[in-house]
Amino acid sequence: MLAWLGDPEGQKKPIYDGTIAALIRCYQTDEKSPYHGLAQNTQRGYDDWCRTLERTIGKRRVDRLTGQDLRDCFLALLDPIRPGGAPRVRLAKACVRPCFRFY
Image (tube, rainbow, N blue to C red; front, side, top):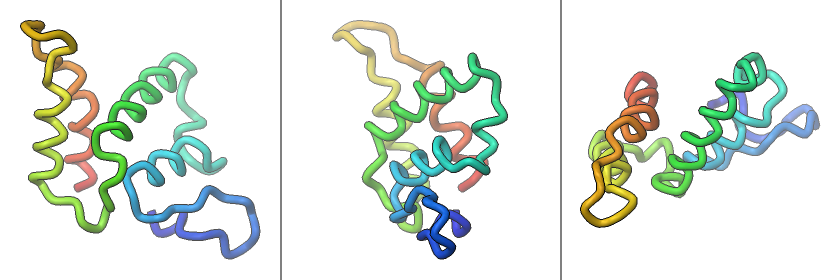
């Protein structure tokens, strides 16, 4: 995260502004990110999860994240697409579980 703060050497790196959305953008676009070493199929799955996380919690600042934020995000992702539909447990776990590893 700190390595992505600003662009001191003029390398046209993505700018990290402290939000989850910016962290996701840096992860996906920085040329040194491990994201670029993933298989294309794996990248597509990560892209879906990243979009979902960005919509759900993207505006939140990383340095102000709490466990409750992650729980709220998880619960929001569980909501079924249609009323009366099944909860989206697999999606919620796939998106939020990696956050707990870093948090």
